[in-house]
Structure formats: structure tokens, C-alpha cells
Length: 139
Image 1 (spheres, rainbow, N blue to C red):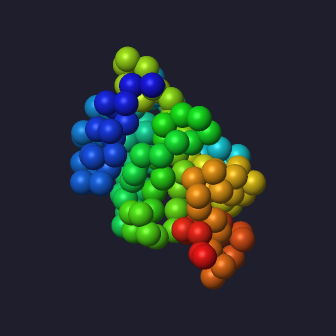
Image 2: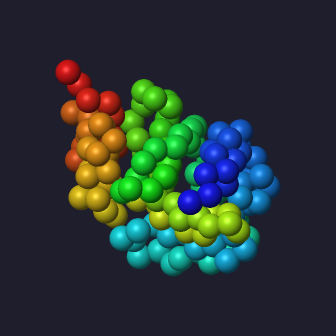
Image 3: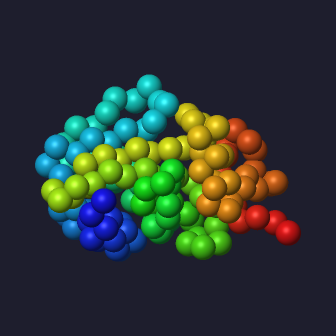
């Protein structure tokens, strides 16, 4: 995977710079909420117009993590401390980011929980399992 594109995506996301994020995407990139009935977004323009502005409407911050053996992202309300709201599996090549899979608990609770567990995170006890946010392990 081209790590430069992912690192630039994270930096731009955390600064809410949509044009800079758009430039990290391959022209024919595909984005989807996995397990959801929503249509795929095909092309960097569609992604920049639909899902990214939706994510910008929150106070989530992005950080790079290992997602199922590949570099990916988690979006958290407090980087390093808050619950994980969205896991993003990413595919990329020399053209940039080619695939964005948004993994959220309401649509893929088992996969979301497995990724959180692999990251050393678990569902917080004060969250409903249906909401499925992950927080740091409580010891």
C-alpha cells in the first residue's frame, strides 16, 4: 500500500481539508459502508461529495492503525482515548487510495468488534452493544 496517500489522508481529514483528501483518492476509487444497504460511491468526486462531508460534521479525528493485516484508519472522538466510532479499511496503489470500506457496528457488529479487539480495544461497558463503539481496555 502507498503509505504516503494514507498519511496525507489522515492529515487532511484531521484538518478538515476536503480538497486535500480528494487528491489522495484515485480517480476511480470506491467507497462503501460494508454490510449496509447504501449504494457504493464510485469515483473521487462522489466520495468527496457524499461520505466525506458527512464525516466532517463530527468531531472525530483519524489515526492510522492495522486493520485486518493492512494499514487502515480509526475515527475517534478523542484520538488515543475516546471510543472508536468508525473503522476504515483502505486499499491503495500508486494512483492513491482506491478503496474505502467504512466498518461500523450497526451494519457489521461482529467484524467491528473483531477489529476493535485486534487493536486492543473493546466495547465500553457504558455503550449499548448495538451502538458498538470501542474504548480502551478497562483494567
